[in-house]
Image 1 (cartoon, rainbow, N blue to C red):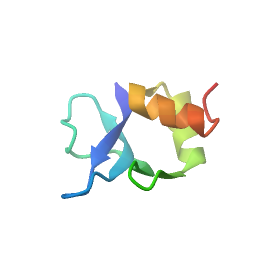
Image 2: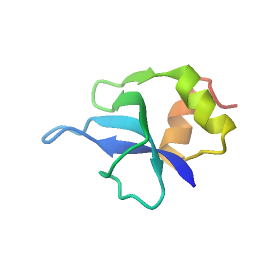
Image 3: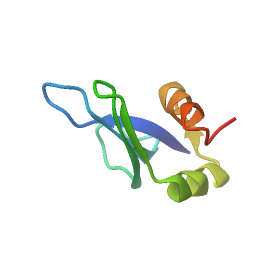
Image 4: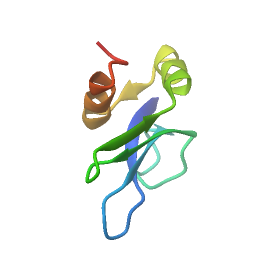
Length: 77
């Protein structure tokens, strides 16, 4: 099963990539594809909408935080 989840990148400040990853891999593990970027401090978000829609059509489940980000960007209703 594939999930859309946050992958931490920043060392001192929390910066996250939104990735499509198999649930059997750990959070910082190998991802299938990077589909976005989220910076909670600057409140910046970049989303690759076609890639996100592709994974959602294939049955990927977003985590709670990613689901909130997608709702805020009006990708999910």
